Each structure stands twice: as structure tokens, then as C-alpha cells.
Amino acid sequence: MRKNIVAGNWKMNKNVIDAQQLMAQLLEYKKENATNCEVWIAPPALYLMMARDIFENNEVGVFSQDMSEFAAGAYTGEISADMLQSIEADGSIIGHSERRQYHGETDAACNKKVKAALDKGLIPVYCNGETLEQRKSGKHLEVVKAQTEEALFTLSAEEIKKVVIAYEPVWAIGTGETATPEQAQEIHAHIRSLIAAKYGQEVADEISILYGGSVKPDNAKEIFSQPDIDGGLIGGAALKIEDFSKIIEGFNN
Ligand code: 13P
Image (tube, rainbow, N blue to C red; front, side):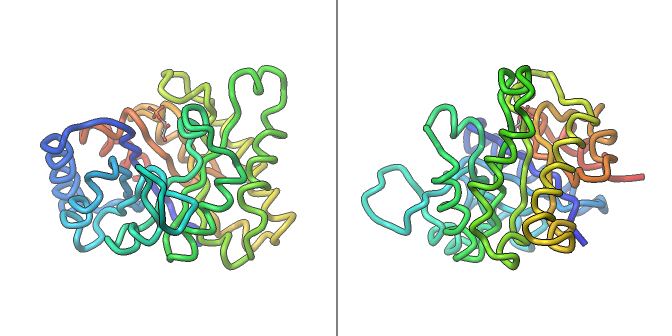
């Protein structure tokens, strides 16, 4: 059965003191509360080793926000799958729309990154999602189809089962405008049906598909209750324990 996951993408936020404080709060929360989902965070790369130390018993999954498609070498500023594996990180976000927008990340590069992550035993959290223009012109299903196929469909069935997909409509990220649960469910079901058509229903049913884009404490439960939505990739609301914990509790009955 696929997992329920609430993952916090911290983006470029928090100095080391504040990052350590939030990790400590999260550890305390996890120790005191049973959760009905896995909890993951993707802090800035600088804090990944600290995160691994704090969550030494895997109370919280530790993910990078990006990683290189290359194994090693002259790629200033990059971090490799091997480095992530060596600090016992759990995986990496790949293809976030902000990487696509500001760093020219393509689906072809994402495909290489996903492969590189899997080859080192890391979980790729592959992000896709349409822009406002693409949705307005009715191209959202087509765009997400192309992104999913190009980045993932060279994988074997065994490999794709290990991937987590995050559908993040660009128009809903950091805008306070959330996709309605029905809009999100439509795309999640679409992604799952594409995977089922290529790899079979059994494989498709094993893949967790997260929704991202202005998930907040007051809308999380309804979003997570949709049949093809297996959790969330949370930006702004992952930066405060009060909000993030309420979102995690969106999985409680
Ligand atoms: P917000 O939750 O701030 O909209 O960000 C979503 C996101 O981009 C998570 O990766």
C-alpha cells in the first residue's frame, strides 16, 4: 500500500539557529504524537547533516531540495546523490517549479536526476504542475502528462514504484490560492492513470502522489481526503511548528 506523507519544503528560509529550533520542535512533536503519515523535511542543503543528527532514529525523513544529475566533478555549487547517500539522507526533491523557473531545469535533466537518485538508493520526490497560462488555456492535463512521461517513463516498474510524485500547480505556490480538492484530485487521478497505462494498475497504486501549493492547516484535511491524494508538499506552512503539525494532523480522523 502506498504511504501517506507530509513533507515540508523549507526553500531558502531560516538561519542555522532557527533551523535547529524548528527541527528540535518537530522531533519533540513526533515523540509526543502518533501520526498517521510519514513526516519529511527538505531544509536548505547546509542543514542536512544537522537534520540527520537530530532525526537519528528516522523520526523525520531528511531530503535535499535539489541534487545534481552528475556523479561528481567540476559542477560548482552542486551536491551529488553520492554525497546525499553518504550523510544518510532519505532522498531529494527533483524538478521543483522554482528550479525550473529560475535555474532552467528541464524534464530531461529531471530524468537524469531521478535515475541518479534511485541508483544511490535515494527517494526522488519528482515535482510537476502547470502554470496559470497553461491551465487557463485548458492544457493542464497535457502539460502534466508530458512532464510525467519525460521525467519518469524511462524507469523500470521496480524503479518507478520508489518515486514519489508531487503535483504542484505553479499558480497555487506561495499565492494563497489553492487548487480545489476536485481540481487536485482530477490531476492526481490523471497521473495515476498514466502510470497504470504504462506500468499496470498495481504499480500505479503503490505510488504516493502528493499535492503542493498553499496547503494550510484549514484546508489540509479536505485535500488529503481525496482518493488519489496521498499527502502534501508544504512550503510556507512548514516553517512554523504550529501550522505544520496541524497539517500533519490532517491525516488524523
Ligand atoms: P507553498 O505551500 O508555500 O505554496 O509552497 C508549496 C511548494 O512549493 C512546496 O514545494
